Length: 269
Image (tube, rainbow, N blue to C red; front, side, top):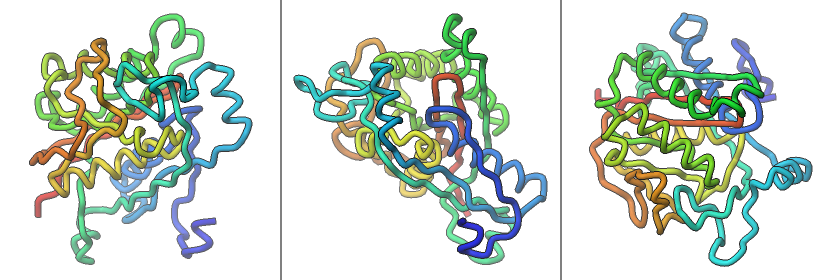
């Protein structure tokens, strides 16, 4: 429908990689690979989510939704008072373009997508053997290798930060596994406290927000974060924006059985 509306007649694909945040990010990774291979000069890629009753019912039956009990009034990524997911609807779309083509038309370049990694594991093995943790660590390491960068060069992390105890703690453990001791000091943020958990749109939204953070030199605060979960041990940006002249951002997206990561680099003409 987008292709018809705007007369786009090259690549046209829909990517769905399970329940969770990875679909939009995987669309960006696929688009970037297509541009690298010379199959297109410019691609619109991203994700969207329209939540309907059966989605709410599924997450409710899994016991993952916040109920607003006590002090829990909304999403609280990495906060010990978190109550679970608050589902949201959103669209996140990025313009990915070959550098030469973008330069020729005088495009405003926000960031370079320099690395992408993804991992999918079988259901039983993922749940019984801690596959979620292993898969996210693998995806981050793969994205950094694809970018030709080391963990020491990561300046900021756009985390999945879903606002569930299990998800937040496993992501924190993965960041410590990949970044080492620096995981406790590298600024981390999640936008889920503002938008809610937007499922298929999350990965693309995370990439867009991270690109803006690099372009503007400002890391957005994590809404809903006030009391750190001692099990996470992360430098979560909260309260007010952090002025940071960052060069490299690591962006995460996860689902029950999938994990993907992007590495963005600040554009300097």
